[in-house]
Length: 192
Image (spheres, rainbow, N blue to C red):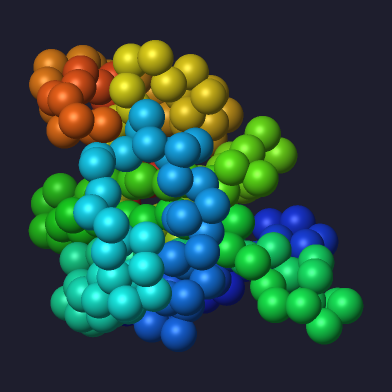
C-alpha cells in the first residue's frame, strides 16, 4: 500500500509514519502524556521511549505491507527553516482495514497538547478520508469517541461523519471499560 504526503497548512504536513520517526514520536507522546491520558489506554513506560516507538513502528510497517493499517504523522516544519528539527504535532491511523464486501477501516487520531484547537485534526481526518476513498478504495470509515469527548465529536461532524450508535464498555481507556459513541462516514457507492 502506497501512502502519500499531504500539506495541511503552510507549516504542517501529513506524511506516512516511518521507523526513522521513533525518537520524534516518543518525544511527542511524552510531551502530551497528561493531555492524552484521559482519552488513551494506559501506556507502559516503554511506550514513551524511542525503543518502544521503534518496536511499534516496525509492527505498523508490517501491517501496512499486509494492507491492515495505514498510519501518518503530522509534522510541524516551521522550525526547520531556522535549522531546527521538525516536530511531531500529532498522528492519525486507519486500522482494521477490511476489503471484500465491507471495504472499511477504523479511524483514530490525536494531536500534541501544544497543537490542540488549531484545526489540524479536522484537516488530517479530511485528508485521510480522501486517501481512504481514492487510494485505498474503501467504502466507509468508522470512529468511536468517549461519550464526553465533545472536541473529537466536533471534528468528526465537520468531516462528514454521522453518529450511528452507542457501544457500552467498548474500549479500555484510562484504566476502565468506557462507553463510546460510534460514527461513520460513507465515502462512496462504488462496487467493491
